[in-house]
Image (cartoon, rainbow, N blue to C red; front, side):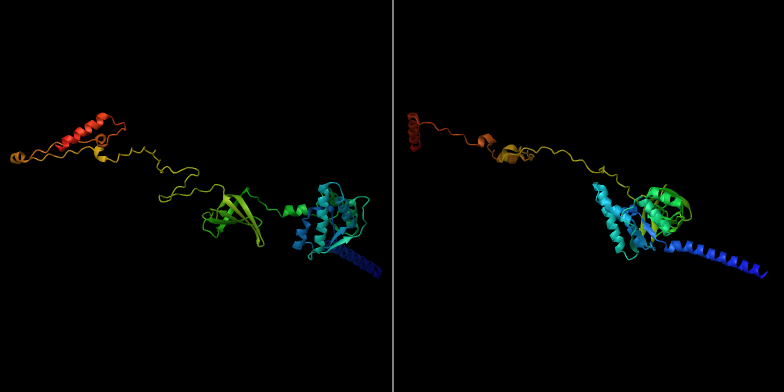
Length: 331
């Protein structure tokens, strides 16, 4: 009987030890297992931003075979591959300079005979580690082999916003915004949405269209507008908006210039008509006493102008006529 009890206690102790060991392996694998970095991640370069944020708590191991593949591509004749490979080598230098993550070069040989992908799978199985890659085929093979995969593309997809500008959805306006015409609602993940012209619709579910988003250190915020926004009422004193590209109709049209009148000659007395003065009635006695004024002939502009004198030779008849004129004047 005592022997049976001792055997049972031994079996219970063995099971407890086995459960403790498996539990330690599961929890210790995520906290202490290494991360083997693939060539595609180094060429992509987004791993630097992830490492700077502090989410890479485990050590990053870059196999020497991966560095050799980058060196081989950097010496390639193709200019595009050469540029991408050199960028991958620069990413390794930047990762080693960061203080937020521990980066080491894992010495596994310069070249992998079976290929870099197979070498990464072997290292992950041997050291109970995971693979960081964006290669679709390597990701599928690692999942089949039971190896943990850290895919940068999956991380970027999960961090993408649920709604993009231009998309529509139904949302409930819970409160007013900073401005009286703004309303505030929240998405299912807690993202705050500011709706234009939604201040009067608090407590109602409406359809909105997203305009833009704002990502800050405090969180994410989105701006939207109403799909069927109510038209603004215009009063009598509110001026109607002027249509763009048209001129106001109240502007007077310029009249064509009229031709100028010809200038009057300097001698205005000849051109101005003589104004008829009203005849004053005079007494018959005054008519007899008043002498008749000699009628003055109206001179015209032609008569006032001096006649042109023509130069001609003096003849003997002209001198004779001058002598006769002088005699008559002396008498």
